[in-house]
Image (cartoon, rainbow over all chains, first blue to last red; front, side):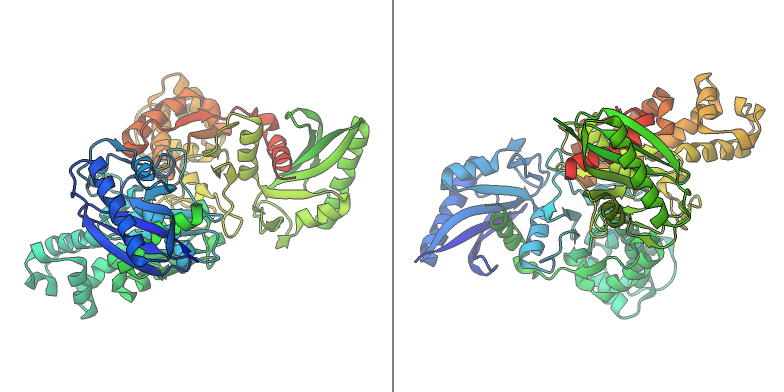
Length: 317
Length: 317
């Protein structure tokens, strides 16, 4: 008997990762192709559909039930990828519809952070949790809000853009064209900006001053902090304080049972979680004190994007 | 044939209003009693249940289907009223359960702002709108978030406390024990605080300086602004700017189709809406520009509380 399986696809600026995932969240087979393999989305979709059919055929004994896609600026309601700044495709691409025609299977699409939230819900630490928030702290900050077991997509299908909540009016310039957005502070890129600003503003010694500024990344800031470097530790504390304020402000809206953190910056572990929990305890509205936990995502980062997209397919199809 | 009807109850610090409401949102009969009619909730619930049965009997030709209750610190999940600072009852009162026993009818309870949101959804301007936010700008700021036709109650049942989103860290002292909460700025009380601070900080003439400061309320600030008083107009602009930032920050989370404003401060009409829409246009994340409207509630204020509670009963029972 053939077993049902779904394909999870994660479209990134450089690579597109895809894999076959069973109902238990096991990746049966996976691969990647260059997202600019074809300059036009139509060509790319044809190639990608062919690769998926090939993967299913090679795996043997499986029947493709459907496809889940996570994409930057993915619109759940319309199945479109709209004006994604990191992709070469222009305008509004009806990606899900085109993929459906190629594969003759149901296709569901959402943005990458919402897909990650579904991954956490179906395969990760949010199993059985009806209300939670997932924040991905990578180059930017992505978010998925889950209310009563459903991802919040909103009227437009673009809900859950918590990286662009304004934390400091008139603050740091953001890629969205505005200033003071959360992701300019609380992300792998944000903490590097903080460390560099501290290096300009302050005169105290720091291990980070020994490094070519162009090479400083969040991992090096974490390494310095691990060694007790005051400036690097302060950068973590500052990042944690702004993230804490953003979290307590989200909690008054959706009152989650858990806030999961995912992505590059989360690898710093307690360097981030300890000051974060301290500031959350200080800033939280009393009625919500101790009603939620802040936890690292339990999905391994290497597979998260494919698993999230596949979880969406398992959930919706 | 007897027509089905529900009772809507709004529990306030001073009065409790209740009424019988038909499926079209028509109030058949209504009345009020003092909330401190009995010092203990048990006694009060007995009296209130008796009054409702009396109202049904007097109205004639109706059968009570159930009861909806809006209450400060009302918990939807548990049907409790918990530690409400404006009520004399202490601790956690299982109000819905007790009322159910008295009346032998289903009872559903939530906080007053969430009830107002359901009123807007069932009987008001949000009919047919799946995603919206309602903000009540009265003594404080209450909120109800509706996502995909459902009020967001969250893990605790207390979600939607947007009056306590921190807008200015270290800002104005709030009744919740923290500082800088939205309701200390954007509410009928908040705009009065703003006007008084401006009167202290500034030296320019204002009509408000002719009034005994203890008597200044939001209506008088609006009257002065209506006459072109610069300080009063600036108070509206400042209020609108903070409210605008709070709205654009909520929009990135739930992406509503409409934001409804309700309550005392909204009576100022364009004095509030004009600067509010101007600031929202300036502050909104580009992807959400022109995807939602900011509108006054279409529920008449005098009946809103009873209608909201009744709408909850019609929706849930």
